[in-house]
Amino acid sequence: MKNRLTSTAFCIILSLLMLSALSGCVTAPIGKGEDLMSGVKADVTYSDVDISGRNAVSVTDFAIRLFQKSAEKGKNTLISPLSVLSALAMTANGAGGNTLSQMEDVFGLSVLELNSYLHAYINALPSGDKYRLSLANSIWLRDDERFTVKQDFLQANANWYGAGISKAPFDDTTLKGINSWVSDNTDGMIENILDKIPEEAVMYLVNALAFDAEWQKIYNENQVRDGVFNKEDGTKQDVELMYSEENQYLKDDNAAGFIKYYADQKYAFVALLPNEGVSILDYIASLTGEKLHEMLSNAKAVEVNAAIPKFETEYEVGMNEILKEMGMTDAFDSKASDLSGIGFSTRGNLYISRVLHKTFIAVDERGTKAGAATVVEVSDESASMEVQKVYLDRPFVYMLIDCEANLPFFIGTAMDIEN
Image (cartoon, rainbow, N blue to C red; front, side, top):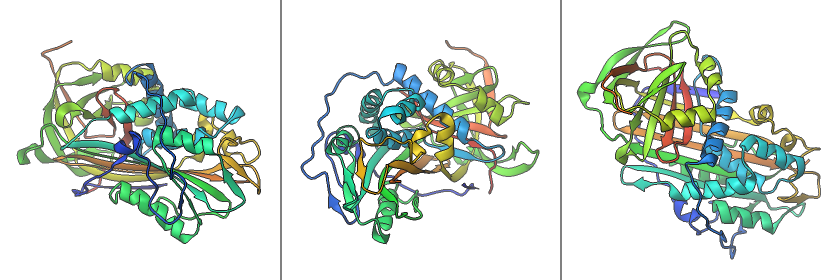
């Protein structure tokens, strides 16, 4: 696991075109290989899906459970549950039997429900000149007679995820191609997510997610001042704090926080500061998807004197053990796994050998930029006049949410901020 944190400013501009792909235009991934989506058109029966209803609570609950399993004492954490869920959902379209049941239990939704929800959610995401959340998906198959992929699996992922799919030799050119595709779809924020292609690997299911938004009110120079960040171990760090007045106050039994909007109030930064004496891990353990969704949906119109440290962080983690602990065990077992809906290999049973996840976020005076990528490697064998103060000058939990579904698409901890 890698973890790096700085407070330098950034100059990354995101550009993703996946929203058009999800509307029915299927494209092939960048890199050498035979385009298997040639002639395959998305065929989705559209239906009204409430993106802020019961399914949103289930997806938020998945996000919290994944976050709880990922968080480590004293270390910064940053995951994109939406990226992880998208890559796993594509994989689940080829799962069966107990493997599928376990995956659906971990998701909190059936695959059919998840396909429909994610498709509706992504197509409803707002974008404008000053804000954008975009996703892209691709599937890479080993060009080898030993591996045969099922057309129904390709069609499902064309229908719901607009995934570009191609055969490739799975050599160094493919390794470079996958990493280049991820880098291109996060404009360089996420690079080299894949370190090697093992001989037993026959498929990669890849999601790339990127966010770029300007604050509704950009900080003035006089709102940024030197401050101190107090770590849990008592260490003090010199930081730059950005001060503002917000008007959406969050409160539960163990923490207080606020919502800070980006342009047009389509997306928001959420901060939750545990009460004095409550550790970050204890607070995270107290969260549930339902509690978080309710808190975000019932923010109080209270004036909040807020302070956010300028920070930048990147994070990477292998999620095999995390997902096993959540209950998804068979998919990682070469003997027990049932991914027969994907296809078959003459060398043995298909199973998930690795789930790799990598993220980046930068927060400064102008706004926030964030990127994430997930790779699934399949191998054979009411208003108030009171004023509250929430200064993020000690470890805190933060999220990026969309303001319609109140769904956290990034969630992390800030335990350590370096200059």
